[in-house]
Every structure is written in structure tokens, then in C-alpha cells.
Length: 200
Image (cartoon, rainbow, N blue to C red; front, top):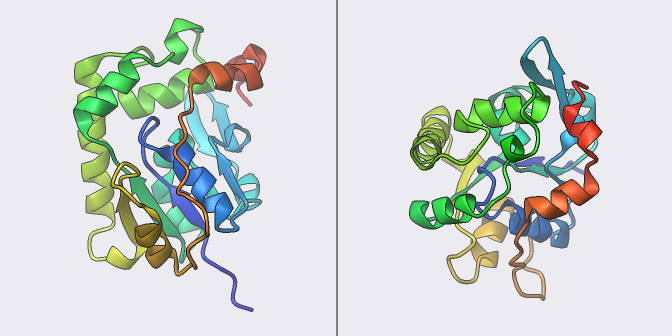
């Protein structure tokens, strides 16, 4: 049997990545949201562990948005989903979010990841706006001419199953499309602060 393509969800945090991960699980994917154990950090440089990424059928959120080019090269034939959101709604959600710089100021992999993606470890409206626009533009440029490999996806656009299932060639589940919110308060309950401080 032909192996299904891996799915990488490359939208920024707070763009519906948690809902999309739940949807992928409903479609039968072994999916992981914000796979922190994939990240490696040494001498101020982030990288990822391919062997850990390979354990999953689908991965999502900021580490995946950071490494989508490298993941594309490491796993040829994969599908990529860029979750998007109306930018002012996204900024408002980010403004109410808990960001790593509010908890840890040190040079950690977590802060480095946020600097790479947002040019900030605390919320800054202009920097975040620029980061969102830049990321979407960069993704479109990278996948130009590869429309079959990339889906731009807004989970707020009504019934999202038809769009997602058509892109992934999957049968629609007999359940509503999941709509979930992932607060960093939940994240920090699951991830000890020493893990965020670790360079591993």
C-alpha cells in the first residue's frame, strides 16, 4: 500500500493550528502539535531532529513554520498547509497571549524560535504584523508553481472539511470540524520551565 504523504502545518501560532491538528487526527493522521522534542539548539542556532519528525504523519505550529523549507527537503512529496487568519483578529489574539519573554528572558531555544519567527519574544504589534505578512509571502514564494503541494487554509471559513479533505484526498468524517483554542497557559502546564531553558 502506498504510504500517505506527510502533512506539515506551517502557519504561525494562533492561526488555527490546534484546530487543524485535531482535524488531522480525526482523519487518521498520527499528528503532533508544537513538537518541542524535535527542536535542537546549539551556539545560538536552531535545528531539528529528522528522526523525531519522522515519527509522525503530521506536525504543526511554530517549529514547523520555522523549518518548512528543511522539512520539504527532508521529506519529499509532503503536503503543506498554511493556516491563515484575518490579520487584525490574529494580532488581537496575539496581544492576549502569554509570550515566552514574559516568563524567561535568557537565551533559550524557545526565545530563539520566537525571535526567528517574530523578531521578538514579547508581543509587539508592528513586529508581529510584519512577521505575519513576511511569513505568508515567503511561503507563497517558496511554493510558487507547486500549487498541489500547498493549501492556504482559514479554519474560520465555515465548514472546513471539504477544502481539507479534497486537498488530502480523504473521506469527510461524520463529525463537525473541530474548533479549538490553545492558550500558552495550557502549554506551560505541560512543559516544565527547565525544558524551556534547556538547549536540547
